[in-house]
Length: 77
Ligand SMILES: N[C@@H](CCC(=O)N[C@@H](CS)C(=O)NCC(=O)O)C(=O)O
Image (cartoon, protein in one colour):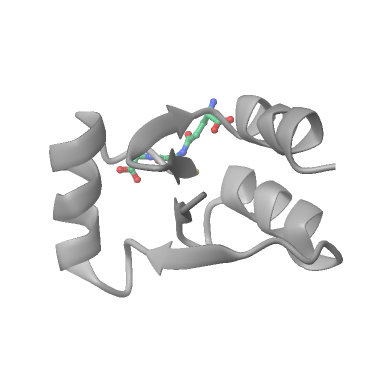
């Protein structure tokens, strides 16, 4: 399964997800949409919105920090 997290660290909702992932050994690619404007464009073209955090699960976008953490709890334990 391919996981990619669009985020930027100034975003408190993103920090919540990043902190949650800190001590987990999940294979997640991090995509900073502030550092790299191409990644922001990519997120908008895939998900329809630049809102972060957004977790791409095998190409399918999941927005909302609480839903992202819940998805990890349900699928990665
Ligand atoms: N309810 C959302 C809120 C996410 C949110 O407000 N993210 C802000 C950054 S803190 C955002 O993406 N703003 C639009 C943008 O930066 O393009 C969540 O919990 O994930």
